[in-house]
Image 1 (cartoon, one colour):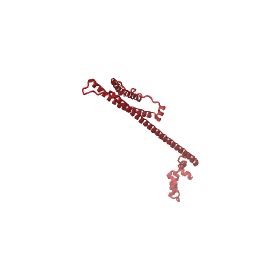
Image 2: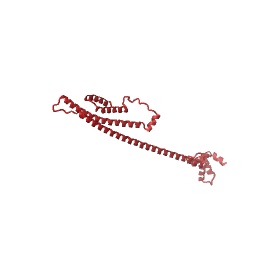
Image 3: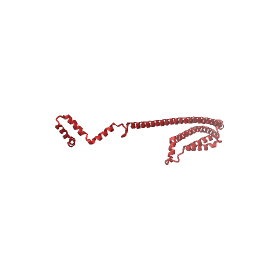
Image 4: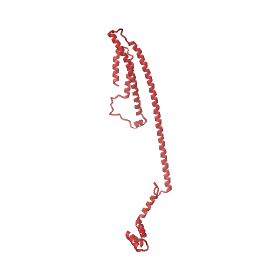
Length: 264
């Protein structure tokens, strides 16, 4: 009878009836009974119990999972995380070691290249000094001094040719030195270009994606190999110019030398 009355009577009427029908029940008890019966309906009790169960569960705990199973699964995940961390640390250490080894190898190769270049420069300098001494010895036979103050036109021509040959040989020796420096610069540039092209990472990329010829590049531009060959050819010509047999070959040698130098 009381339960059916509680369901049928509205919210405010139930509190009013309860407080008026009983003189012994205080008003405060009516307020407590009113809040208990009105705030928790019967159809919302299971939802409230489920909410309390979720609030008391641990983070990451599955539904209907015991604490022992949750603990075992949590320790397994920790073991996997620690193993992955150790693997990443080992990979990082191996990478750093490989980079250090590559840097040391590069420094060693650079030191060897510098020593070899220094030896070649010394050898070229010694060869140039010997060549200059031999040229000076040959010029002694071409040097001419006229007899007296009034020289004939033939003697003036011989004196002019002797001075011209002397200056020409010194100029050729200087050009040989400059061309040797240019040749070393071209070889160093070629070596640096090859090192940058054939680096380990670039090699892997070239194997995976073969480079296509650049359509926008000019085909008439001389390559490093052609430039080096031209420098070698001019150097050989300068080496041959001191072995001429007569002054009549000077003009042809100078014209050819000028043409070759303009092509560089």
